Amino acid sequence: MKQVKLDTIIQGLQNRGIKGADAAVILGSGLGDFAAMLENRQDIPYAEIDDMPTVSVAGHAGTFHYGTIGGKTVLAFGGRFHSYEGYPQEVTLALVHITHRLGIKKLIISNAAGGITSRLQVGDLLLITDCMGPNLSYGLRGTPKVTHRFDNVPLRSRILKLAASEGITLQHGTYLYVSGPTYETKAEIRAFRIMGADVVGMSTAPELVEATRLGILTIGLTLVTNMATGVSSGKLDHSEVKETAESRKDDFGRLVSRLIQESFD
View (cartoon, rainbow, N blue to C red):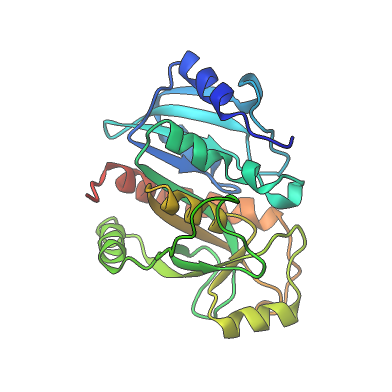
C-alpha cells in the first residue's frame, strides 16, 4: 500500500456513525484491553473500512473501538502501523491524520518499550516529555518545518499530579525511536543512554511530532515491558510485552480514563 486514501477511510467511519470524539487513543502492543473499559462500545475491524491499512504485529488487534468513558466519547485504535512492516511514512502516520480529519482535539499515544536508564524498572509507566531518533524524519515531505517542544512543564506537572491522585507512580523521560524490527545491540544501548534516552521503541515518536504539528493536544505514555539489551542479563522476548501489560492494565486504564476526562485547556 503506497497511499492512504483518507477520504475513503473517513467516509467509511462516518457511515458507521463515527463522526468525531472527545479524545482518541492509540493502543500500543499488549495494551488493547483498555477497549473493554469503553461503554456502549462499537468494534469495527480495520478490514471492514475500505482502504484502511492492515496490521501484522502480535498484540495489535487491528480494530477501531468507539464508545464512552466518564461521559466522554472515545475513538481507540487497536493497532498501529510500523515502518518495519514495510509501510511508508504516510501509512505509519495514518492514525494521527484520521484523528485530525475527524476533528478530535486530544490524542493519547501509548506504546510498549524497553527501559534504558537504571532508574526504570519493568512495569513502570512513563510520560514521554521528549523524543529522539537516529535518521528519524518527522512529518510528511512538503510540510512546514516546525520546532516541536514536548516538555510542556505545566502540562507535565498536571499529568503527574493527576496520576498521583489515582495512586499511580508515573515516571517521565525521553523516548528514543528506532525503526526495528530487531532489538538493539548492547553498544547501541550504551550510546543511547549517553545521548540521554530513557526508553527505546519502534513507534510513537513520529506520531507525537505529527500530532503536535497538526495542533492536537498530544500525550505520550510508555509501558516499560522489558529492560533493553545489556541492561538486563536475560534474552529479550516479545512475550514479555503481553505479560507486563497484563500486570499493569488496570493502572494504565485508570490513568488513560482520567486523561480523557480531564480538561487541559
